Length: 97
Image 1 (cartoon, rainbow, N blue to C red):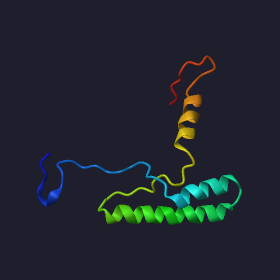
Image 2: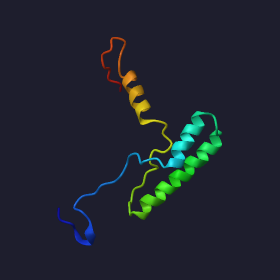
Image 3: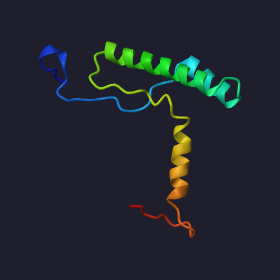
């Protein structure tokens, strides 16, 4: 692949998905699930982790940043829920509009 002037590739790519959760955030999810921390403390930890993720992305030069989906409880829960909603009583897939 040849690079353009200024070391840029001949295409554009933006990160728009999940980032790996930092240990503090993983622990906060576990502690919140166990009712060991209140919702406001959990939100503060999420906010701190999102700020760190945004700073990291900006420091690497990304023009578009994401919150890393740090507030999402589970990707798989969303997928399973969507799958269940897409099936009718007969089990056949339904198209929703």
